[in-house]
Length: 493
Image 1 (cartoon, rainbow, N blue to C red):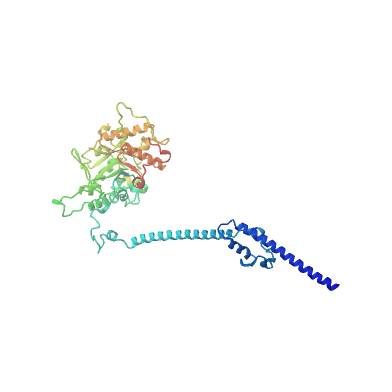
Image 2: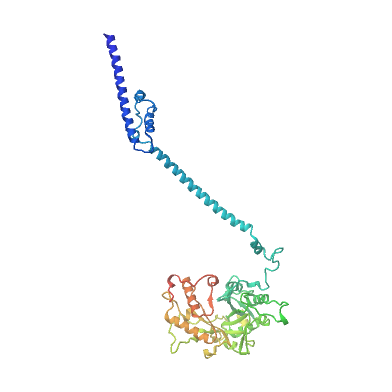
């Protein structure tokens, strides 16, 4: 009985195992049929190939029957989730394709950057090649005039002192204050320079105040002697000068006919200082470099000397004290206003009292030696006032060159971003009266800050016809474009 029961148990187990295998096989076949149905929707895969893929999941080839693979497929794939079991294979192919595209794009981008870098490097190397290995024309121009090269001895001219400098109608105010007096102004192109002169012990010293005077800074050392040297270099005597006639070219090689104005500001007594100035100019005068009056006409030469400050008009206008007629006067511009028709001069409040010359301290022993007597008040009246004539009609090209006045004192301050109508009328009247007399207009003591205000005033004065611009900043006046409006002063009607 026990043996029969045991046999019955074995037979029951075998039947159960066979049933499970058949059920599992039927389940897998149903799953494969689902996969085949899904894959049948893709036109890219043939039916046999889809069948092979389905059977390969259970280790069967497409040549075997489904029933023969049942035993091998009796173990279901439990480690894959159902969503992966139903997932078509072409999804993997698309993923691989996208990855390949990304790698291709990255390679193309990197290749483009490398190509551009090579092009840039080639451009830089080409530029360096031109610098270090110049071509034919550059080899000639770089070595021109040097010993052993083309143009040997031809690179310079006798009058190269100011080659390439263009003269500009500006006045170097307080020129002696500059690091390099006279030469800095010429380098900038200014056609006028200023020297403040003091008389002590029969010597003419140059400086802005008594405290700034030094024994070696004289009118001769800073201006007269350098001008003689410059002009001698600009007017060499060569075999090409017929009959030994010497030229009288000015300091500017680009415009030899342009004279340079030397404005001498008399800081001490004009009457005492005047004869010393006449004597100090002899090195220039004897060489024919000073412009002068010859009867009824003006003889133009490289240098024009103008006296300002305490310079006495009556001594300049006299042939006795000014026998060579080569020192001219800086006339008072404020007395030359002329209107149009019955126009009356505008009433503008003055910004301050008239500016006179230097105050003289008679207790100073050096000054006492130079000027035994304290000058009278009329002798230190300031620019255009000392020894003045009774009528402004006395000023003409026979005795004067400039007509000047303090802008701040006479025109006043610039308010609300622009000059007023009254201020413009005053400027126009000054220019009209000075030009009728043949004199050149100059305003000194111009506003210098803010920069926009300064540029605005410069621009207005030049456009209205001022002949010479009084400047302290040479670079700003000659090297930069200050005519463009900016900021508060941008409105220029």
